Image (cartoon, rainbow, N blue to C red; front, side):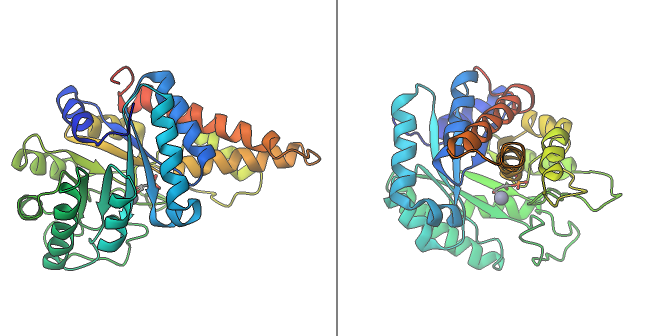
Length: 311
Ligand code: G3H
Ligand code: ZN
C-alpha cells in the first residue's frame, strides 16, 4: 500500500464514533513500534513527526521509513507533520512526501493565523495533501498564548466556523482543556475537559473532523517505571482514558499522543540500562523499549480510541 491522506480515515472515524491515533515518533525504532501495534490491531494510523523530530531524523530518512512501513503493511498509514510552525516548513513537508501537514499558527492573531493557514491549504491541496489548522491555546508548550473572551483560552465556536470556512482546512485542532507534556492539570486540580465547547463546535461544524492535542493519558505503570529508574516526573497527570473515549465518540477523529510514547520508550531504556548495565549490544536496550511502545499503542487503539479492526 502507499501512504494515504487522513481524508477517508476521518470520514469513517466520524461516522463510526471512534478516533485515529496520531503518534509522535522521533526515530525509526519508535515508528516501528507504532506500526507494529497498528498492524496487529488492524487499525489505520497516523505517524506524526514534529519539526524538531524531522530535523533529528532527517526528512529523507523519515519519508523512506514511512514509505517502507506502507509498503510492508496493508493498513492505511498517513505521514503527518505535527505543529508545523511556518508556512515554509509545511511546504517542504508537502514536497517531501508527507500526506498531511499541520500548520500551527495559533500563536498569531486570528487574521494572521487565517492567512498563513490559507497559504498552506492552497499549496497542499494543489498537491493532494490535507491540512490541519489550530485555533485556541492548548496549554503547555503554548502556555504564553492568552485569548481574552468569555471562552477564556478555549476555542470559540464562532471563530472555529469562520476559521474553517476562510482557510479551507481539512481538520481543526481545538483547545478544550488538554495540555502538552506530562502535566495536564495542576496538582490537586480535578481533570476536566470542556465537552460543552466541543459539542457547540460540532453542532456548528457538522461532519467536520476535530483534533485533540495534548492527549496523553500518562499510564501509571509506565510512569512508575520511568520515575523508578531516574525519571523526574513525580506528579505527572494525564487525561483520563474515559474522557478520551468520550471525545472519540463525538467529533474528535484524531487524538495526538506524544508524552506517553516518551514515558514508555525512555522509561524502558532507563530500566534496561539500570538492570543490565553490562550489555554491549544497543539492541538489548532498544528492543524492549520498542516493544513497550507497541504494547502501549496497542492498548490505546483497542481500549481507548476504538479504531481496532477499522483498517
Ligand atoms: O502534537 C502532539 C501532541 O499534542 C502531544 O501531546 O504530549 O499530551 O501526548 P501529549
Ligand atoms: Zn500538539
